[in-house]
Amino acid sequence: MTRPSDYVDSSSSPEPEDSGSAGVTLPKLGFIGTLRFAWRQLTSMRTALLLLLLLAIAAVPGSLVPQRSSDPNGVVQYFRDNPDLAPILDKIQMFDVYSSAWFSAIYLLLFISLIGCIVPRTKHHFQAMRSRPPRTPARLSRLSVHREQTLAGGSAGEAVDAARALLKKSGYRTELYQGRNGEVSVSAERGYLRETGNLVFHSALVLILVAVGFGGGLGYAGQKVVVVGQTFVNSLVDFNSFNPGRFLDSDTLAPYSLKVDDFKVEYEMKNRDAYGQAIDYTAYLTARHSDGRESKEQIKVNQPLRIEGTNVYLLGNGYAPKITVRDPEGVVKFTDSIPFLPQDTNLTSQGVIKVPDGLAEQIGMVGFFYPTAVQLDSGAYTSNFPDLVYPMLTLNVYSGDLGINDGAPKSVYSLDTDKMTEIAGRTIAKDGGPEPIKLMPGQTAELPDGLGTVTFENIDPNATDEDFSSSVARFVSLDIHRDPTQAWVATFGALILLGLLASLFVPRRRVWVKATDTEEGTVRVEYAGLARGEDPGLREAVDVIAQRHLGALGAEQEK
Image 1 (tube, one colour):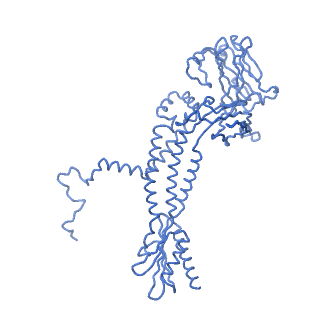
Image 2 (image 1 turned 135 degrees about the vertical axis):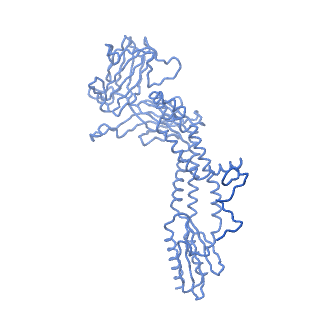
Image 3 (image 1 turned 45 degrees about the vertical axis):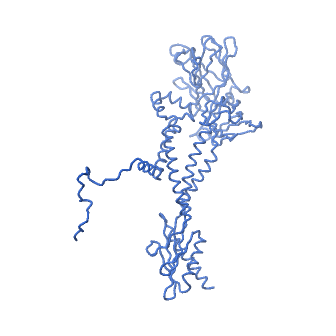
């Protein structure tokens, strides 16, 4: 077969002589065209899903390293444990992941992408819901779901009217159409709730991003260590660490207080494989509200206290030995309950006591507390049970400059010994110096060099040598959060779930019923269906409509 004389074969057509490259030459987009192309790519659903995945990946480092917003002490400890790596991570904002430039960039791009997807789709969906159902195809038999039935009596108009009434009862939007060959039909569609759910899902996702942003800006998070018997006041100066939102006015904190009356721990005592593990914590508090009334409250690990718009969580606990230091004349120069940080599950704990004034020299003591002390073969002590069975406190004592007079902030949980001399401890004991001071509740020991005495106070006046169960105070670590958009986030989260369920399980269907009067005096009825996407229940749905329709027509004819 010969080709026409004007036929051009794209694979063999000659290139223009002035063309410097082989292949098709595309038109230049230009500046406006490039912007339009970039906008369409950014606002595509594929890009939105990619950004959502990137946001989830970007949040992972926040769970791998401590964050300044939630665990500032953990950040300090990370710098101490990893002096080479920590500055590098800090430069790329790994300790401030959720407020970092790169996380915010992904967050904002996702926000813009979702809005760019939602607005045009909402407009199109609104127009589609107001438009008439599409005309009935001329040849329904070409559709994959199709069936045909011949009726012995009645008319095409009656059959279509009955089909329209049935489809309306089934939740379909309907429209009657007249064919060219005299046939009549009803076009019906349903399932717009599927696209509505899809839009609700994405709109709620945008709104939850907005709510989280405003909640972070207007809320705050703070931590406080409270010894049993002491009181926490919800004011800026009473927090151990405080991380306000960008738009928070710290003068507007709700004026309430919490007194820790008691703290109870339940330990596993029956299962030998888990012996000594804590199975329940309960903090008992007296809350004084802003209106002056008092109430008794409890906090458990998974049961926070809701008070004055804030949530108070129980994060941790430990022991707070009460230490008293006196000068050589017996005058008290220091007395306080010092929270010791647990080092293991048996609550072997470490703490620091600093005495800057009142003695001949500044002294610092690094203490180790053992709730149930046992001595190892090496001579060191450890605890083999977390409750107070045989409590012991050991103190390594240093004298010199505590470094607190230069104005630089110092952690209460660490002691800088660079300008200090060890005067009692295991290190100098190897060279014949004083051993670490060992104390049990109620005992007093002399400080080296005649500096005075140190006493490990027994806070229970009724304690005996056999019962130390209440001789040492405990502390609780409280985490106080205020999120004014918490209810909105919960609402939008529920809408996300409902929208997702609707978009997944509501089928989008179109159904047609066409009736034609034949020359033999019968009525030929066709039923057909079409789904948008996968719909394994479409054939069954069309069969049910046909059966119900035929049943309704049969009942009318019997009447």
